[in-house]
Amino acid sequence: MIRNAGETLTMNESTRTELEAAAFRTLVAHLQSRTDVQNIDLMELAGFCRNCLSRWYAEAAEARGIDLDRESAKEIIYGMPYAQWKDKFQQ
Image (cartoon, rainbow, N blue to C red; front, side):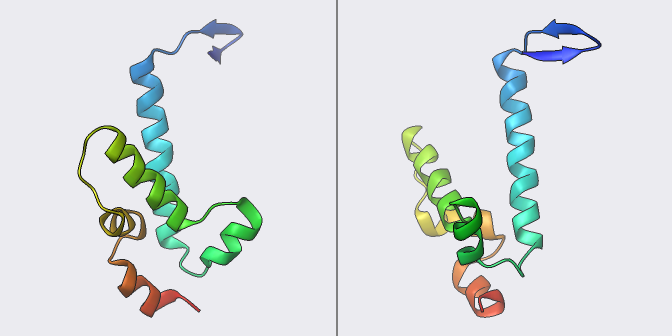
């Protein structure tokens, strides 16, 4: 449910999925731009990190019968191959 000027509107599943996807893309872009934030910092503060997000992505693909290995999922989340990101940004 969402509220608009005091009235309650029902959100359909398609709209909900679109909003969640937009929020997810924004989160991924934010994490890709904040290379100064290390995964250990994310784990300590938020209880998840980029690796968790990539694992969840791969698991969601697998649940839908899509063949996506974890390294490919990491590349989607990190915006580059994981080994390259580690060499470039991991402290």
